[in-house]
Amino acid sequence: MHIEVDQSGKVEDTATNTVIAFSNDERQAVLIPATVKRACLQELRQEGKTGKSIYRRMFVVGLFFLLKNRIKKGDLVTIDVEYVGHSRSIKEHLLSLLVDAGVGCGPDNFRFERIGKKSPAHDKAYYTHRGDVKADKTINKEELLKYMK
Image 1 (cartoon, rainbow, N blue to C red):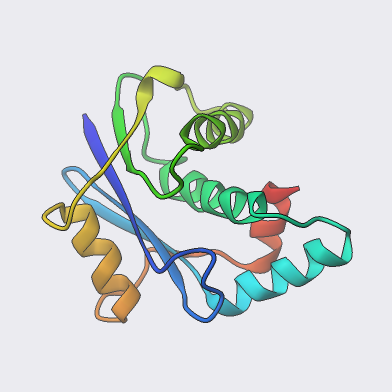
Image 2 (cartoon, rainbow, N blue to C red; image 1 turned 90 degrees about the vertical axis):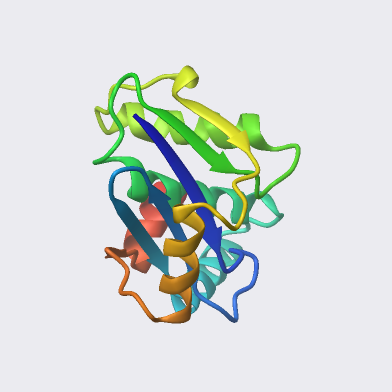
């Protein structure tokens, strides 16, 4: 099965919520509220962690919660390119989280390409971000920090 993934509301923009959504024969979305992003950043900075990699890790945790119960061996997941030049590290971190959670997948399950606005994944992310559609999962501070550390 082919799964497309898109994001609405950049993780780096702590004034707005972030929604990461997928589409195949169904559509799902996870929400990372702006308040949760700010609280996590504050705690991580107090621990001395800085840099832009924090935002990529936050994105990966969102991907993890979105895909962990949906991806199966043999699925192809196309993730919209959000962080140019960092696809490899995103894939490695995501695979690590999925394998640790007992999800049977490998590097061949993932590719990074532009999704575009005509994708159902884009629509799901966009309309969830606008508040027209409810997210299937809202990630809280504890969940986000658990998988970022």
